[in-house]
Image 1: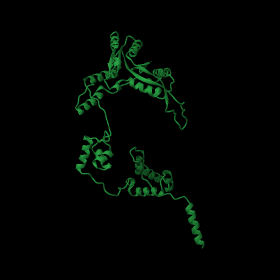
Image 2 (image 1 turned 90 degrees about the vertical axis):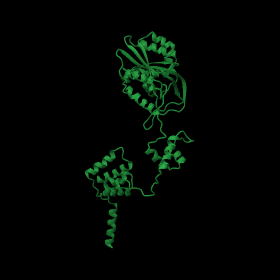
Image 3 (image 1 turned 180 degrees about the vertical axis):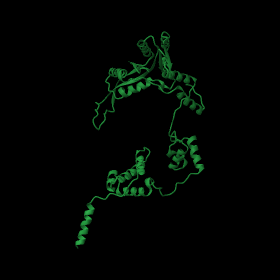
Length: 378
C-alpha cells in the first residue's frame, strides 16, 4: 500500500515538473541553411514556419515553448522535428499529395483554346477571362490557366504603343537634346499650363491626425471657382515662374511670354519647350515672336506630354498643395500656389537631370511600328 501511494505521488510530481529539453541538435551547415531560408524573400511562409521550428528546437527550447512562440500545436512541432531528423531540409517540404491524377488535354483541345484566345472574343466582354474561356471551350479552369501560362498569353493585359513618323523623331531629338546638352549662353525653359484648378472647401472641418488615426476629411466639398496656371520651369536651376489666370487663352499665354521675356537677362537666348496646344500657335503669338528673335519655341510631339519637364512640377503641386488643400476662394488657392512656388525656389528645388536618350525613346516605338506593320500620322 505504501508503495502504491509513493508511485502516485511520484507521478503527480512529474506531471507538474517542466518537460525535459528535447534531444535535437543542429549542425553548423543546417543552421546556416535554415537561416538562409528565413532571410530569403522567395521562401514560402509555410517553409519559413517550419524552419523557425527547427531553429528554436536546435537552440534548446522545448516543444511546449516552441508551440507557444510559433502559435502551432505540439503535434505540429513534433511532426516537423521528426521529419527534419530523418530527411534534413528536404523533410520541411510537403510530400506529394495523393488523389486522382490530373487529366491531360489532347493536342486538339490545346490548339482550340489557343485559337479562341487569339482569334475570337466572347459575347459577354471585350476580352477573355479564365471563367469565360472555360465556359466556351468546355475545359477546366486550371487547364486554361496552364495553357495560357505555357504559351505566355495574357488576355486580361493591355499595353499601348505609339506609331511614329519622321516628325515625331525630329521633335524627340530636338527636345531631348535641349535637356541633355543645353546650348551655351542660353536659358532652357519648360512651359506648360494647368487648367481648371478647383478651389475646393470641405463641407465639414478636417479631423486632425492623432496616434493611431490618420487625418480625415468629409466626402462632400464646395467648389468656390477655378483658375488656370501658366508655369515656366528652368531645367538648369529648377526655378519655377508661375502666374495664375482666370482662363486659358492665347491672350493669357502671350502675357506669360512677355513676363518670361522681361524676367530673363537680354544676353541669354531663350529656348522654350511646350506642347502643341492651339493657343501656342496663333497669329498674334507668331508676330510677337518675330519681334523677339532671341526666343525659340520647341514643341513636344502629340501624345507625348511626358516629354515636358513642367509636368513633373505639376505633380508636386498636386501632391503638396491642391489635393489636400482647403480653399474658400480662388484668391486663397492662388496664394497657396504662389507660396509653394516661393518655397520650391528657395528650399525644395534642385537641378533637373534628364537621363533617357532620344534613341532609348525612339527605338521601342520603331519596333512597335514594325511589329504592327502599319503606318500612322503623329
